[in-house]
Image (cartoon, rainbow, N blue to C red; front, side, top):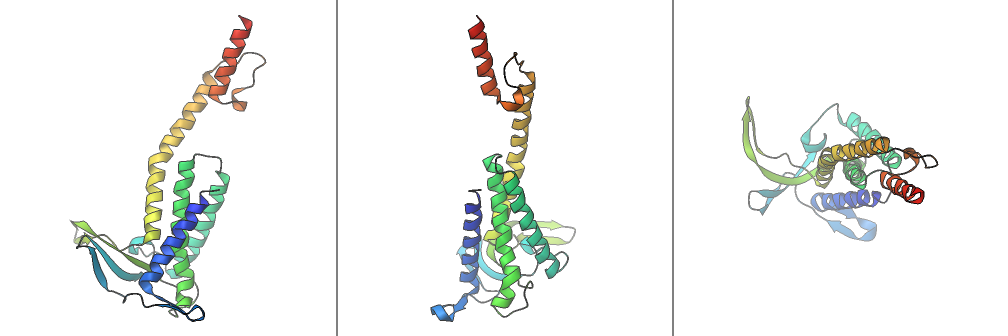
Length: 219
């Protein structure tokens, strides 16, 4: 479960970036940071990349389905489900576990906003916080049935981690599945002499080596 270190790193980076944007005040540590004003936008790489502070009551990229409480509860169960699944496949391909760890980190990062930010910043009750978004990227113009899009929806580090994790799953899961099927086909096609373990108890390369040893010993 070492991939969970990546989950922790994503959560820490995400929360650190959000607090720098939104600001924070910790009196007993004598720490205060004003952050930037809600709605303010500052160019980073010209007009292509901006730092734009908005608060999103919905899902990633401004998607809003089912209301705040539903989204928060859904996120909690989704995070628990991903964690359990990661534990169950702890012996599977590393790249698949890495992708799920990134998705889990992003889910937890935004979940912290939804669960605690309302209370921490005095803006709402528990489970009713808003997600801090601040990465504003230029996008090619889209005009489709009256819908116009010139900039990508403002997002954050957690959203980025989820998106990269999903892309990794789409790219590598099929390759991993095809590799597994090829290994099984090889195991089933290799004849097993008497006295050798079955393919289920030995890998293809190990089984091939044992067959060769058996042939050499009988010649």
